[in-house]
Every structure is written in C-alpha cells, then in structure tokens.
Image 1 (tube, rainbow, N blue to C red):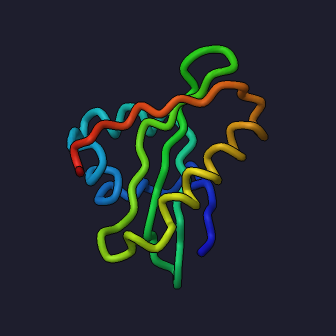
Image 2 (image 1 turned 60 degrees about the vertical axis):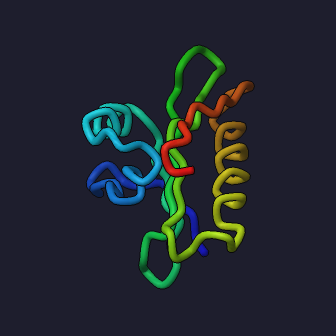
Length: 104
C-alpha cells in the first residue's frame, strides 16, 4: 500500500469521502482548503483521509475512510498513523479528529 497526497489536478475520491461524510456539498467545501491523501494498492484508491488546518498549530482530521472491501486489514490504522506523521512534518503541534459516526 502506498499513501500519497493528491495533486491539485486530481479529483478527490468522492465515493470514499462520502462514505464517511454524506454531505457532498460539505466535502467539496473542505477538500478545497485541505490536504487530501489517498491510500493506493494496484493503482486503485482504497482509502483516504483529509487534514484541515483549523487554528495556528492545530490541524483536524475531518474525514477518514477505507473502502468496504478493504476494511479490517489495518488500512485505517495506517492512514491514521500517516496523518499524525504528516501533521508533525507540516509543523502542527495539535491534531484533532472531527469525523462523525455516519458509517458506524
């Protein structure tokens, strides 16, 4: 599995994002001002997370999702660890998780 940041020219994986947040309008709004990372396996997007700067030194995980057929394989845990490392590299000292429970 490879985790990488989406380029500004790539469309985000809306199907995965909407699995964690059912409001397409809201997702489109925060993705534009966030860092969006995808997990890939065999050239297929299998997971995603979104980091949104909220305050000085604070960044929030506003969306994290793993495709249904790839769940229970540790991918979500890998995405979360990657998000924490990324936040540190970007210079943030606080990371918050603001995802809902719509997919539980």
